[in-house]
Image (tube, rainbow over all chains, first blue to last red):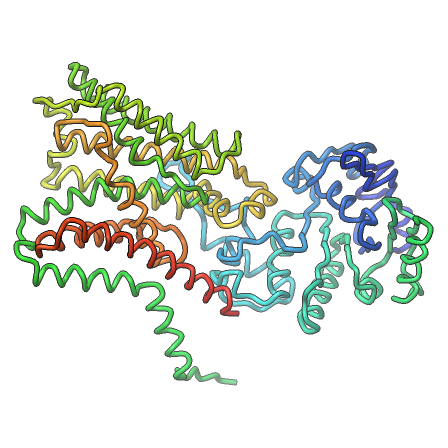
Length: 258
Length: 328
């Protein structure tokens, strides 16, 4: 994180966030500030609470306690759609794509472009524009796919990530949350996804990255947040940390939690 | 650098496989129609062709309703009984000398109401559509028997009502115009409107659609409501064509409608419910049924063939989906 980012008011601010599932406490009293243009990695072992925290930030779950602010204003995300409307888009591990639909249909899913037809109130899908715009979003990410009508199931894992990111860009998302973006990908595809995230960062987007892969975290993140037993116990710039250091921090967090 | 594209044998095979995958069953259907035109006695006579077209219209409109419900990944097994009940209600009103318009409105309202109840049950009460629509079908069947007391409404009904099915407009049979209207509406809705795109996304990937902000429950309710409306339209046309309305009068159309939708899913957009496929499949099924009768096949052969088509279509669609998924 740069000094400028540290001093500026946060884009997204969480205070005292807690999330319980019945008697199980998944997240306890987490404060977190996300600044414009930074890549923040959230790490931790299984059951550390990172997924639950992400669900709260993405609107998939409502917090049991605590408050959230977006650009200094209180926000309440009752659904992923609410979060999207406030500029927070989440790319889930399974990418939440419709495999048999085309690239363009996936990029514009839920926010299709229309044009008037005969009568002013009668609007039809503007398929040509959606295809053109999808191509533009993908080329922004330096992904060269010509045929935007190709079903997503015929794309490689990295290309599918690019489609999911394009959808987030389509929503003009200020913050893109990526849940384990390189899980289950081969070496080549992982490199493509890491490049995509770098491209996003270079374009001024804010990225929250959840990853088990410490090498990815070190390669991409400006800041790392480490969680254990539902608490945040590390929040620091990545400067100088190695993948081994991060693993050690996570393990020590686990030991503390135990 | 100039690039020359050479059609390799692999490319040609891929193109051929694409053509067969998309149009194979449609071409087979055309061959079947040509076969009956050539060999079935009296098949190609004007009277028989009109009969086939009429019968196709009832089936296709009902099957288009099923297709719309299937587009949002829900089954509507109540279409035939909904149509029977709606026909009985319309018949009762016509018989009681209410204006034809009132009978039509009542039939459509019955279809829409039952479709809405199906949608409510599936989305709010979380009853799987298979169970929900079986239940609705039983209720509709019971109500139809209750209204008629098991006896069909028959009479000299006003032309204003019967003409809806038997009449012509600009020289074209009204039934064909109804079918064209319903098909165009359904096709336009699914292919060209935002609501249609949301229905398709809901059917293809419910959770992904929900996360993209689509009101998936609403889309499911729309799909099932439209299925009910199509049943209502079929009911009006069946009653108007026969000048009678009997409980379970549309019962035989259920399996045919399911077969039309499933066979339709093997063509044009393999593996996906699609209006064009349903329409063409309905024609093929009715031609097949008619042709077999004309060639002297016993009545039960039709049921056997129908069953084979249903199983074969699903197997074909599953294989098409599998192939597409691995074509990376």
